[in-house]
Amino acid sequence: MSKDRKQSDPGICQTIGNALALNGSFYETARNTPQNRRIALTIVILAAVAYALGSGVILLINRASYTLVLVAVLINALALVASYYFWTFTIWKVGHWMKSNAPTYGDLLSPIGFAYSPQVLNFLTLIPLLGRPIELILAVWSLLAAIVAVRQGLNISTPRAALICLLGWPLIQVAIGFVQVLQQEMVTSVAMR
Image 1 (cartoon, rainbow, N blue to C red):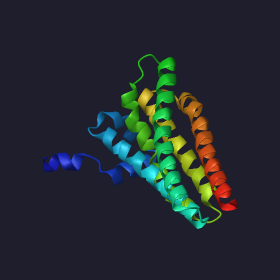
Image 2: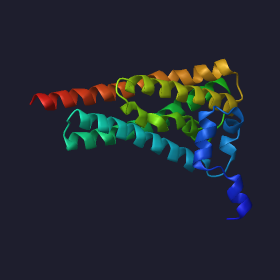
Image 3: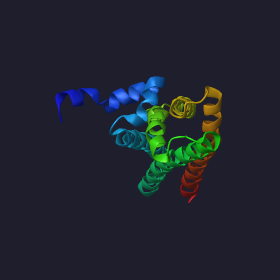
């Protein structure tokens, strides 16, 4: 690979920085830059690992068994990755319904994956008493990033982009919350034995 090519390709840190800053022009060109799908998936996987490790450490602090922690970490990571594909799918479907020349599902994977950049900070949920508020702030930050990504990607107004993103986002938050409650119930039931 040439030196010029290496300098023109954004690295993962620069990509996360642009995504965290809600840089509209970055999201506009997100699907036009080579290798962005791989970088976006890497960001989603990093977010899943951060989320899973944060919840795993909390389970260890609560003296859950190693088997339960391992299962919970795996479920949390898979839930976050599944939420990425589900949310992209809902955005794609509603986007096609609202605008006939909307990008393909594959074209939306990169910008929505970049919108998961705030979730890379999910390990901060380990901070006592601030874990849940931090988790909610990161989720809203991801929502805002997705709104910018959809606005730029579909070339529509911000209110329309917000509507498209808000149709799938609450379902994801409920599903993630359900997984957390289920894990807490499992820890409680195992502790009572």
